[in-house]
Amino acid sequence: MKPVWLVTLWWAVLLVPRLRATRKGSPEEASFYYGTFPPGFSWGVGSSAFQTEGAWDEDGKGPSIWDTFTHSGKGKVLGDETAEVACDGYHKVQEDVSLLRELHVSHYRFSLSWPRLLPTGVRADRVNKKGIKFYSDFIDALLKSNITPMVTLHHWDLPQLLQVRYGGWQNVSMSHYFSDYANLCFEAFGDRVKHWITFSDPRSCGPHLPPLQTMAEKGYETGHHAPGLKLHGTGLYKAAHHIIQVRKVLLGAWSGLRV
Image (cartoon, rainbow, N blue to C red):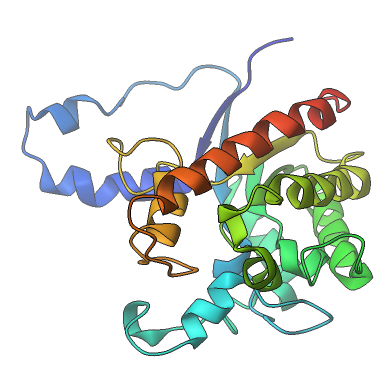
């Protein structure tokens, strides 16, 4: 099988202001490749469910820790914004796919909303069929436009009830609930989705941060991100440990997929 080269546009967007700020001959400028991209190089763009979908409490979706965090008072996020509407992607699937076609990209990376599929976070409680249909229709629309879906299972929007009942990623039981959620996604979409990502952007705050520090540290150690806990000295390590355990548990589930 030939290697497939991938790039997402949001990385390019992040590079733009950085390049403008550099001077000629700087290491930052020298690190950017201006040459011809190799044959078979694939361009793509990416997004996350919480930041784009909106419809935060529609069609059976449960609340996420980011819904609670952004609704819990002033000063939590810039401009005190919430994602109640966001980009309204939940209601604009065809428009968004049309925009992707205009960009001439071959891949689209997006995340699934765990609480949209499992409102309580627990598969045994209830599966939201409307959530399954939404993502299924979206994947079909992408494939119809010859755009390859790349699906992220978790982009930080943990179901709020898992946080309330078990303490979220501070609890080892998350590996069980996440595995159930992941297997549901594989069963529902695995016939069409061949590229899966477990957790999004563990190093998104900068190249010098260790893996998982963004979600684990800012969510459970400093409280800057949802769920906003300040468990100094233990929050980061316990959350990171349990997230790593989840990845190990999922190896068996992934092995059955043609990825």
